[in-house]
Image (cartoon, rainbow, N blue to C red; front, top):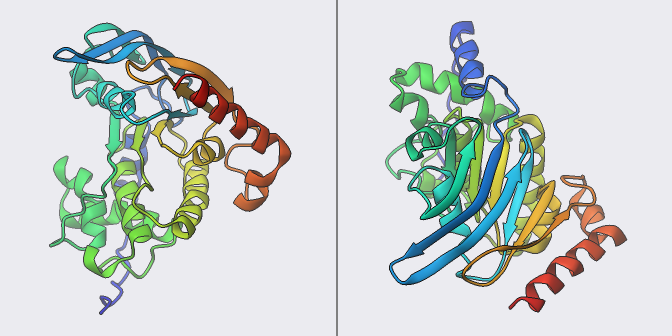
Amino acid sequence: MRATPEAPVEEPQSIRAAGEDRAGEAEGSPGGAAIELAGVEHSFGALRVLGGIDLGAAPGEVVGLVGPSGCGKSTLLELVAGLGDPAAGELRIGDAVDARERLARCALMPQRDLLLPWLSAIDNAALAPRNRGASRREARALAHPLFERFGLAGFERSRPAELSGGMRQRIAFLRTLLAGKPVLLLDEPFASLDAITRGEMQEWLARALASEARTVLMVTHDVEEALYLCDRVAVLTPRPGRVAVELGAPSPRSLPRIEAVTDHEFVAARERALLAMRERA
């Protein structure tokens, strides 16, 4: 059974303006903040996970991280997010160096959607403004335009169990956007989806990133997904992870997707990335 669509929530001008201000805070730019990593190393006890990462992302750039399982991709994302400090090296987001300052500039979307089953879709999406002290009405007013923009209109009152996997991932992405941070960190956002739904969600995310410019780091095992969605792709070596090679995407976020991923330049870039992974395995 699907929930009855919720009536539109009127969006007061003051709330709309507040949402726009939050989306561009921290660096004063809606395009996001620059990310710089220099010699970043990390270990868990005797296990050395990252062996010296040098990587950067310009404001508004989408950078993908691919590599074999266990090479430290998710660990790197967590360090960027401010969930810890690296054992060595420097990690900077704009002028933020320590973990607490980085955390204030980043929104992390984990592999699982982690939607709260007792909340409606719109209330799940609006958790960040609620946590900042907004009333339920104010938070919903911030979330509602995104439901319209990203093809979720009519499902505001649906519970997570009533939504498809792709729709749940959209809600999780909207929740990440509404955190109002200049940097988005996406950890395998479509790993749990079937191939057809995954392709559809890649096109959806391409449109979303075009309309909501932020600086993005995205971890994925799918080289094709990385080249399609990202401006640049960093291929990591097996553990301890280092950047083996960086590849520019031929035509990131081109629509329709099927034409982009079958273009000869795209296919050549995909083969270069796969070759780099095989050579360093």
